Image (cartoon, rainbow, N blue to C red):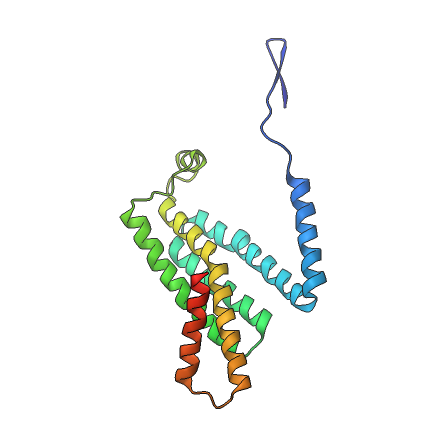
Length: 200
């Protein structure tokens, strides 16, 4: 940007204009997903767009309004994203409901660990200069510890859903290949699969 100060030209360079490259990379990402995934790729793009829209158009405005607890908004949005994602990608099947229950359990555990971490380590959510400036200038009443909690949960959500559907899908394949397998053996297999995923 160029400004005139006392008859002299003054230049300020804030940063590079990256937005065009972001759009190009998003376009390439979408094309690769469609080329490789075809029908599943379309579903995946839909759920990604849905999740982004819910976060940008519902969650963030509700957080800024301050009418609801950020923790409750985060958990409600996580549940909605989980339902829409798992049902869209896998349909109304037993493995879908197993994955949804697994995701809810994983998010509940992540919520507990996030809350304990924030409390015990006295995290404020104001670790960056930008966060401090927002708190001081515009968002006085916003609880940045809860914003930090929301970031942790939304960051964990994708990984938790991946693990949940991987285990549920594996167990469904075991059940299809051996319909007489007992519930206990399925549970044991699920724990073994989960341990392998956790180990890597």
